[in-house]
Length: 189
Image (cartoon, rainbow, N blue to C red; front, side, top):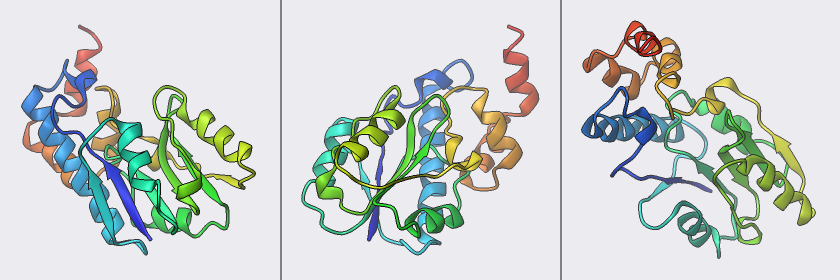
């Protein structure tokens, strides 16, 4: 079993632009990826592949099309994820385990038979992925975790990283002097 992580560095995290420059957003994206990889390396999965080419759906569907063994899909902007979350997800007996993100996205997706599934990310992908699994007669388990649901999309999300994070991404924010008061001061502008 391995994990796949779709990763886009160039022009990433544009919704963080009110607070971070393009180069800072790219560096933050790299650091968040480091945190995700660290969690995978410390889990029972340990093997991973970073997908950097193609659109999100095309890259993932291409990577899982012929895979006959279980696979874990992890979004790269989950710097609060820990190995225990991964272990709990892959330890489920369900055919499909989905960890929703805030706003209805899919932050983590475990597929016992990936070759029988086709992902459809963007917008409320969580609901679509649940429906895809049910339409195929697959059992579904919803993994509800604050840390796994907390992806870094907008400046306010960075507050959670500064409060709860202790990895490379949180350290990077400290290095570039992003503080909770900096983020909260943005709200008054």
